[in-house]
Length: 401
Ligand code: SF4
View 1 (cartoon, rainbow, N blue to C red):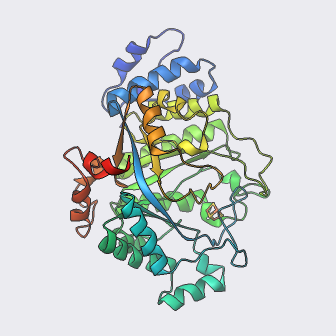
View 2 (spheres, protein in one colour):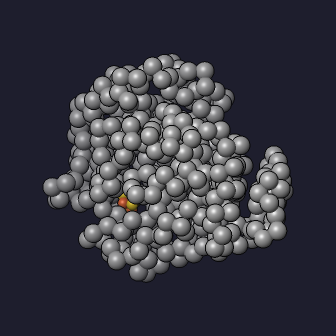
């Protein structure tokens, strides 16, 4: 059971508070909420930056990836999403195995280590075109196809798959785990209000938080390193954000399988129902990131730099320790309006804050040697890329800085 740290911004020095962070301690929900309401952002940033240094040293990681947009057809409709397409749109995608493997080979040429496979939610349940596409390839579900193509990617290129396919069952996780080093599923928000009429998830049954939380817990039961996180600014309250951070912390306390938490700031997209919705202010988002570090001092916390193109360096001050997947080749198909920074630029900016940029695999170092978390089929491929610190060997990347 965690003990709770309470403190007062007015009365307690940073070093006094840091001394109270011992094993398992955390701030309470009330303190977290007070901090989110507080105007003293510098104090909160100082505290979270110190905790980041204590628990994550001076390293900030990223994963060098190729983005495989295997299909952008989706059963659901979220009112902020421009990734989803219907089969009649010219930009709809249903990739054939040869196309996937060609792309993975390009990723290998550019010294990527991650094959990120992204798809909409169970498209075969909504579109006959998706069903036909899969059946022509010999599959009845997208998960079966991704499972097989993951094996081919590994065997043909050595790249390590990380799939993000929405809500999947335990049986499907078992299938994917053989050739995926980790899986991804954003919680986004556990606010049930977002499913109501006129709200962003009204037509997205997979975003029902009860179902999502169960999938996240199932990944824990299956010993799968999981990337999850919150989407900030889609109509949730401050209390709900704090509750969600504590919820993720408690799931991780129970299953110890959450490898990172992404904090993603909502960005309004043209031609969506939410195009007039403001994105969260930089200061507000900074505070949330800082508070996440205060709640989970040893968690890997990521913000996607492309979604804060002018201000992403400020999140180093808030205590992040990861920039997520960055591709030297492909675009961010979910947010094509936002280009990733060049890796060289990211390195310069990271170093300007006295931090070192290191490449990690799509599975974080602390899970690589954890019993049963990595499939035996992947062990050699994983070892191939990494050094003793379990990060990607510098010599693997040296040609493509
Ligand atoms: S956000 Fe995901 S689930 Fe929602 S419409 Fe887009 S692809 Fe589908």
